Length: 278
Image 1 (spheres, one colour):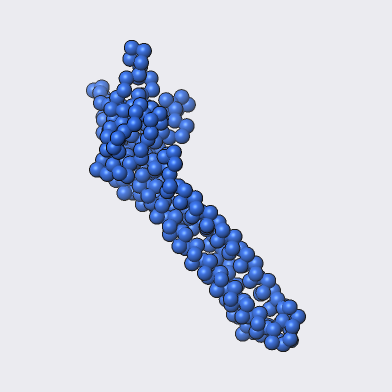
Image 2 (cartoon, helix red, strand yellow):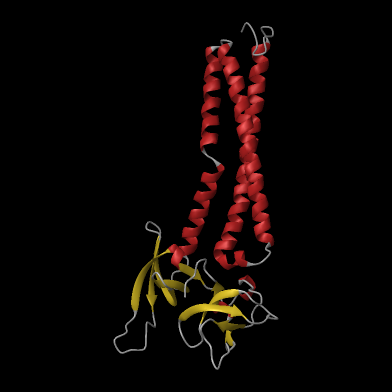
């Protein structure tokens, strides 16, 4: 080779090749760090999917940690772009200086590897892993009772306790059974097919520690005592233990000019969906 990228002597090409390999190692290291960050993010995703109401806490260290991980992922992604640009500059210099056929083959392999890394972006990995986790979590609800929005119109949404019969990972739809559709003689158990956004899992009855803790004054969606229907309610008082019942005041439940306070088990209370109409 007659000159280096920087215009040096005949040995310069070897120096450029060493720099190229060092940059490629840096890129590999960045990918390993990204994979570790993705693994940590997926662990937190699983926790949130197991109890999605956790995100409704006023201050949640899990969300702060998740934000930090995403910030680090963004930083690594930007470093990956910088390292890739440096590799491109070295590759251009080697090509212009007339690298040997053997060197060109090595460069082509390195460039293909670089392209694969760049195409496998953070966002693609995060979204794919998150969706797989959501689908697995949805499938695990078979046989469980959940809160479901079975009816919706321009004025209000209707939520009931239903049993999950099946979840189709292809269509991303639940098949659910309303086991207690009504009191009239013509009422029979009804089946519905509902999208994932229409289903909210209840907290585990036997695991109050994993259930969200809604503070006094917080609006929630809860099963009205003696029914299988869920309505908007406000937490009326603090609980001493997470296993204690919630004391709630349901909207439109006025008696003698006041809202009565009703006890509802913690495992029949979920976060109020955004945009809920009642």
